[in-house]
Amino acid sequence: MHIRAAAERDLRRLQQIETAAGGIFRELGMDRVADDVPPPLPALRRYAHSGGLWVAVDGRGEGAAPEDEPVAYVMTEPVDGNVHIEQVSVHPRSAHRRIGRALIDHVARRAEAAGVPALTLCTFAEVPWNAPYYERCGFRVLAGYELTPGLHNIRAEEARAGLDRWPRVCMRRELGAD
Image (cartoon, rainbow, N blue to C red; front, top):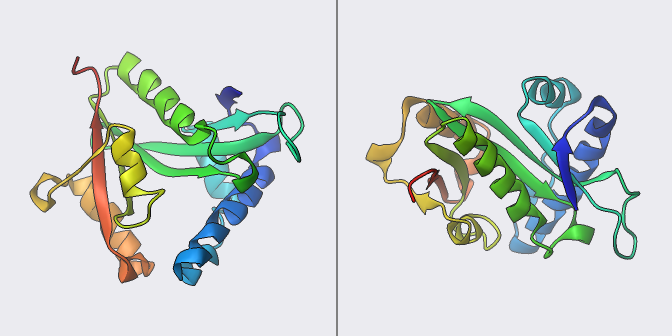
């Protein structure tokens, strides 16, 4: 597996990954999430141009993508002095191979090298591959009083989009605190 910055040629593939990865939410009765449309190309392009879009490429395994075709991605942006992980998606054919974790760790190393104090994200509290997974990746759930203004704004946008139908949390992973 190799992680690289996303390129224009990857963007449609990232939409396909998002759609495929979202389908697993149907197993939990979260059809609204499963049916959500992937990020539009202009949004993906904006993340790519700002340096906040990374892809994992891997040509191993049955039904694998060609060698330089993405099988997963992470989308990030600065929020209140931290790096906020907006999305991590792994194609189901490449799941359970620690690719999502590798992408998160890649973002963490880059952020730490830049002197960023933490990674943040918002996620579903009770979905096994969401908050419980991120806790195993070193994140902790933030109490309401710990939310920064930017995280409050993100949560408000999520609520407007209907995501509060299921419990959600904001999480933080400290960097450089060895």
